Image (cartoon, rainbow, N blue to C red; front, side, top):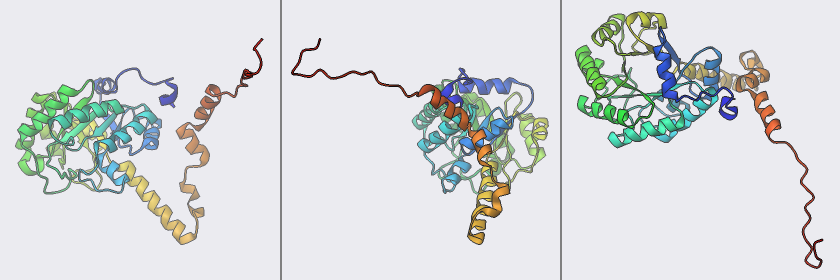
Length: 313
C-alpha cells in the first residue's frame, strides 16, 4: 500500500537504494517478478530487490523474447512492480531499443517509471535469449558507446552491461568487451550463458573488483548453482529471471485442463489462494480503510439560488 499512502515509501532514489544493497556483505538475491502481485509476494518472502525479465514480460504478453517488446511496454511493468512492492527493481533493457539517443531515452523513461537498475546486452536485433545459439553481436565499440550514453543520461540508475560474447568469442572476448564497457561507464557486468563453475570463476578472476551478476535460467546452459555457490565464485548479484512466470504458467495450464476435464475448478481449490490470502497479499483492507478515511460523505450546505424576482436580504 506504500504507493498510495507513502507511509513506508522510501524517499531515496531507487538507484541509490540498489547501490546501498550492493554495499552490504554477501550476494544480493534478485528474484524475477513478472507482475505486481509477484513482486508483493517476493517482498513478503523477505527479498529486498526484484527483477523484471524481458523473457517473462514478453511471455506474459503471449510473445517470444525476440526484442519485440517496446520501451513503453516495459515501463508499464516497471510501474506496476515498483509501485506494488516499493522494492528496487532491476530491469532487462534488451539491446536498449536502438542507438545512443534511444539508450538515453530508455534510461530516463525507466527512471521515471521507478526502475533502480538496468542491464542491456551487446546483441544485434532481433536479439535472442542469452542461452540460445547463433547470437549475433555488435562491435565492442558500438556497445561501449551505448554504455557511455546510458551513464551520461542517468540520474541515479545503476547500469549493468551484459555481454553474450562467451559463446562466440570465448572467455578472452567476453573479458575484453567487459573491460571496455567498464571503462565506458558501466557499474557492473553481466556475463551471460557461462555454463560451468570453471567459467564463472575464471571470469571473476579476470575482472577483479567489478560487481558481477549471475543468471539462473532453468533449462538453459547454466547449471543449477545456489546463491552461496555463486558468491563463492566471486559474484555480487544473482537473478532467477523467468522462474516465477514458469511456475505460474504451469499452474494455470493445470487449472485450465482441470476445468475442461471436470467442468469446473472444484478439484483445484487446494492449489488456490483463498480470498483471505489474496486480499492480505494485495492489502485490500488497507485500501478500503484509506478510502473510508479520505472520502467521507458530507452533507452539502443549503446554498439556495437567488431568485431573480426578489432581492436578497
